[in-house]
Image (cartoon, rainbow, N blue to C red; front, side, top):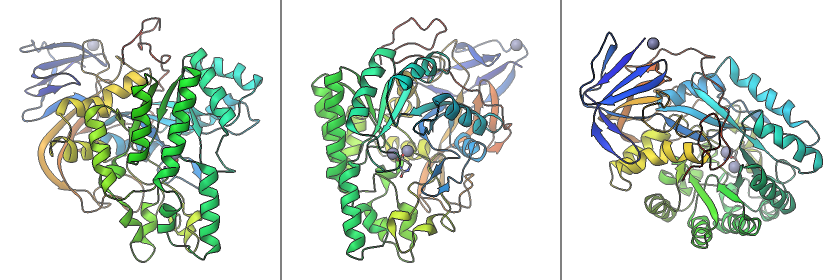
Length: 472
Ligand code: URP
Ligand code: ZN
Ligand code: ZN
Ligand code: ZN
């Protein structure tokens, strides 16, 4: 059925204006000041912003990691995402050496297909490169529409790839039209520092942070950026946490290298002292890279404002405190890394960013949605409010005050990383392709209704012929 959103203020990455939006067959078909209703269902957005659904470029749903499996799967994770104003996620498909890439991708399709309530795509982890893998990558791009590859520079003996693999992936990506993503931490140095800490009897969660100092992130980020320049390829650095990494990205961009950076809500508002909470509660705040000294936060905010960092990903990777984080009591290296962030990503950027004057309202839309759509081959199908785009829309009350908490959230996990944080603003209703998933703060979606997204090659528009170039 047709829908007409009235009385709201439309916000895109470039403009803010009063307008009505007509939705038909899942698409936006008209935007204007006084559109005739012609039998459309009227949706009143009075007092609210109407912006494109958030696109979360970094999630780990139903992922085996650290000796366990992330608590949120594609059902609870995407329901929570929708409540938080996100209508698309791009999740990381893990691979194993020697296993056909298609088999891993199939496993990820199985995890998502009957569960997702919003649209989703996959990035593909690259752990090895050889002629066989190179041959498979063509089909990964052309048949699966997976146009971003992830290389881990950390997690030695588990996920970590060496520099030769990274360099070959960069070269292949350039030829095939994919974006290479890196987890930028020096895994070899971390391995040395963690072994030494354990040998010295240091087992508490805080040593997770102390054995992965900002220098190891800066070094790996700089190395990846240098190799990208040499390969004349394209790079996206995930979960940038510190000034050292921002500096390396900025240097690379100033040289004209095609290097992009993402940060996450936890690095913008939480700091290293959280790892020192008593009774092992510090384990809740174990991420890689780790939370940093408070001074890094201002650098990250400034980098978002000036465009040296361009996106925000949640890095959703949730584990219960009880039973799962517990695995690392007495040995911080066994604490599953990651936290629950998918639901609060958009609201934290709005409240801490827009309301506190650190980024503009239009930058907020760019950072949470539009730029991600452009970088990952989803624009203009996703990531904007425009005629012809999917009607992925958030109706957002910018004035309501609320407190983030495990009690109020929709993630399956038993704690909230931002417990007690006061935020201003909340998604009221969320539509995916013109259908309500959240309506007046109630879930009305259907598991399995999310569509798998085949994405365009890097630098291309999401149109069907995929031959049109895009300016990111
Ligand atoms: O601690 C984190 N970030 N866990 C998720 C896996 C990763 O490195 O992104
Ligand atoms: Zn119709
Ligand atoms: Zn990572
Ligand atoms: Zn991650």
